[in-house]
Length: 452
Ligand SMILES: Nc1ncnc2c1ncn2[C@@H]1O[C@H](COP(=O)(O)OP(=O)(O)OP(=O)(O)O)[C@@H](O)[C@H]1O
Ligand SMILES: [Mg+2]
Image (cartoon, rainbow, N blue to C red):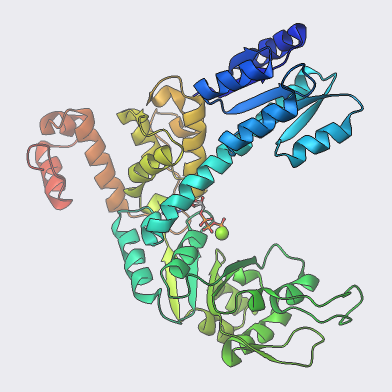
């Protein structure tokens, strides 16, 4: 999908340079030699981006900009101004230009400005689509999953969303903890009140207390005015305490008090404030171990995890992978793109240490880099095709163990698939007697084509 750019400039040589450079970058380019012609072409082809010179005889850049913004406020316009005419650029920005380039410019200036603008327009388009989707889909269906592990998660979310119970979501990085937290909020009667997220691991220790609970002016050096904490911001809604396992020990009693008393007392303040906040927290840390080590208070843990929700790593719910891939393709506007069997199998077998986030990034990259509408094994980078010395795929075992039976089942299915579901051939392939294969097919309830 090439981005479409319209250039408007009455200076022939500059127009040619722009046209040439942008074509070199792989964009589809149209050029007009006057504002009037530019608007005509704009109406016909609705480009993703318009680059217009400011000073032109007849209709100038500002008039072009205003006319475009009137017809299509979403279209991004970059203007070209002469060196030393910053006031003109400012005026254009006020009238809705996205950015400006000053003459003379080099190829890199142009490339960067255009790249940034197009990236921004991609984002806003995506946001618009997501927002419109959100209005009729603010429920847990935005979390994709069909495995029995995820079905369990959906069931808990459905049951607890509209209660006041504190929820602790655990799972490795990228398993969707924040997504689940947001869907809990969206499925509760608090959905129209704020959802406020705070990452306890990302904020320096000495600032965290006032970030959470606020402070009053003069509470400490540097507290030049009152600060409203995240808890106050979330009043009536939900607070999401991300990476709660990293909450410093000295702050834990204060949080415990807030949860118990449902009131906060801002740093340096004398007035206690009543609050109505639902608490959802998440961690990818092993809290049991932190409790044993004395870095996390057990009483706080129980307060936070009235309802625990565990998100299993992706490698333990590989059934979800094909569906997730499909959803990410359509999220990135590539519904028609498919993956051939070999590529899909490699993606399903990969251990995904970065979980769903890594899968989404991988799919996005494959969609950009692909050579055709069918993505094959050759499009995947080496990490998906890792082979051991004997040509057998290396199995990256998860830290918390892996069922040998599940592995055996996967191998049997793959051997059958490779041998067109011929059991004699598959048994030979696995170097086992045919009756042993049949026994395993029955044991694992593997559905053979025709019996499905
Ligand atoms: N089941 C899912 N369906 C669709 N998208 C998902 C799913 N799980 C995760 N994602 C996507 O993967 C990315 C990571 O999810 P999220 O931020 O919720 O993970 P996390 O567990 O909070 O990770 P971290 O511990 O690193 O903060 C997000 O872009 C999210 O939308
Ligand atoms: Mg997160």
